[in-house]
Length: 45
Image (cartoon, rainbow, N blue to C red; front, top):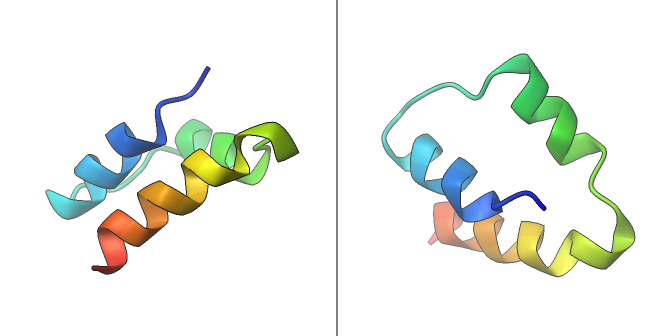
């Protein structure tokens, strides 16, 4: 299972996500969308 908060923390440190991390975001299954949205909100707020 992917920890999207790790991606959010990386973005907040102004680090670029790798190609595979970006692909993982795009491939997020429906069951994990809430976690992805929570991480996105962390970056936006």
